[in-house]
Amino acid sequence: MTFEDAWKLLDYHYWARDRMWSALEALSPENYTRDLGNSFPSVRDTLVHMYAGEWVWYSRWTGYSPTEFPNPEDFPDLDAIRDAIRSFTGEPQRLNLPSAPKQPIHYATEIDRPQPRLDRDREHGMAVTVGRLRPCPLLDIRMVALVHNTIRGAAGAALLNAELLEARGLL
Image (cartoon, rainbow, N blue to C red; front, side):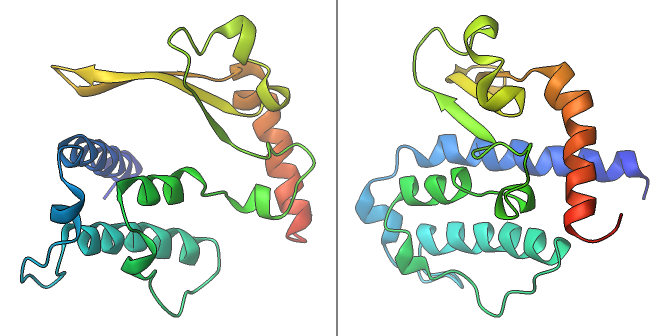
């Protein structure tokens, strides 16, 4: 498997996961937690298992090995799982690195955002602003994501990587 193959698989994974979210919007709260008699009893339990898989993978990749999965009871509805994904932070935030944004991704609810003039410098240019999330007949969903590419994409990424290496004692 090549590096490009791995990225293609990862891109597919996130495309499929986001498509699944769109389909689940129509589910009633009762059907979300109803026992279907499967190996994961309900839709909620299946979603929590999927979330746990991503969480465990990332945790192990960053050097932590979890001893148990999240409890499905902690996720009473779809918003709870979305919030868990949205509130996820990486090692730069946990280590409170000087150039790391406190919140790496911000969701703008205004219909005309993000806008370069208004959002590019969010958290000193180190955060991504996402907005205008909407259905798309071709790609299921569309959104606008904005980041200051010079700061976050080049100079800022190099600085953040150096801070992370220093924090880990590798410099």
